[in-house]
Length: 324
Figure (cartoon, rainbow, N blue to C red):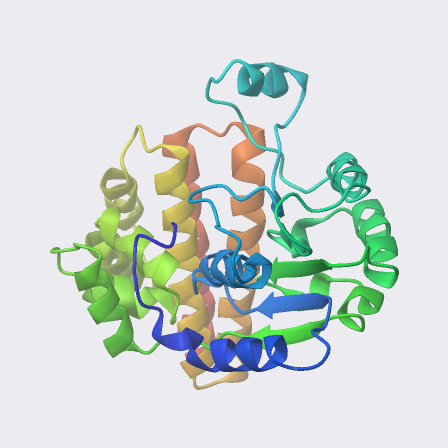
């Protein structure tokens, strides 16, 4: 998702006020953390804020990629992926930001900015830095080069080192309301029935857009049925597998996992008894674990879909016992 997908983020107003106030102050803080759940437009904010910061009176600013805005994000997974990247081909991304990327960024900071006196480093997502990577970044945050500012985009700020958090100001991005999500989906050109997407997205436009594009309404309904009615003869799990599809790609499976986790989490929050809540919390934890294993374990798609259904069915059985 990029800034062109949705021109207006209604949850950015307070963050912009604080950012512009800081820019107009006598001393702009050099380190910033943009905190909030995934899919709230934090990267779009970081990119726009960075362009405002590096812009100076009388200096034309280039469109597109800016030489004084450095972005550190997921790189190629391995040497094979690196070769594909260098050849301009599709490549697999690493699952974390590595220390070599921070070292390369620090090397570039040894020279002056290209156009003006300021430069911005965006790290996205900062909560996926390895520990050694975080320690390397900490040195730059402790002694930033003159005119250099850091913007750390994070979905889980608690995963950042306390020493990093203490050296940055935090801008928090609130979740979007259902009405805001509906308008944004409409503005983005979505014409399908996106009620299920909004319900499952929990205030995240990124998640809502993904759910709407994948047409996950029928899958959401089937997940609800498995949690509410169970599946003693396995027909419900078979139907879930059919709806997901035997050739579902990684993007669709990722969306299904996020949808299932969201529905289970919503039920856990509204559950009536501690045993029922515990069963749902355990199911959510197992879904998170399975989602993390799926990309690297190369599961058969059909068996993976059945396992998702089984985890949901077990949560129903435990809930039944809780009421028994």
